[in-house]
Amino acid sequence: MIRRCEDLDFDMIWTIVNDGAKAYKGIIPADRWTEPYMSREKLQHEIDDGIVFWGYEEAGILAGVMGIQAVQDVTLIRHAYVRTASQKRGIGARLLAHLRAMADRPVLIGTWADAAWAIHFYERYGFQLVGREEKNRLLKKYWTIPERQIETSVVLADAKWRAPNGKA
Image (cartoon, rainbow, N blue to C red; front, side):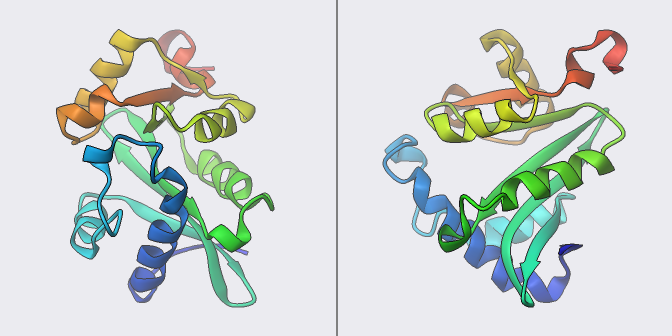
């Protein structure tokens, strides 16, 4: 079952994010890695900035989470993580499809440039990498991240973004 996460889910979201993020250790630049990957304070800041988390629940327990955030004229998919023990079962795909169905504007996703599996995942669902200059412009316009993260990230866009006037 997919459901909107509530305040009571905060600890579970934090746990899933940090468990799922273990896949990035040693892949993303060492100067961008922290233990835990996302602090409780950072997660709360992201929620306060408008990220709404949705979760995939099995037997009453969240197995994966994915955030959606409306920013200006686009929708961002943020912080998509599935518990390590629950990966490779289609949970991320179900969450992505659910959030895309909710979006009424172009959808953008940012991820780490060296996380090939994440990039391939989004490409399987119709997202395409944007060029380097466009990536830099988009990350500065729609995300609030440090310059170093901009340097080491990519942006993928859906068909609405790539279509003239933002309409597929």
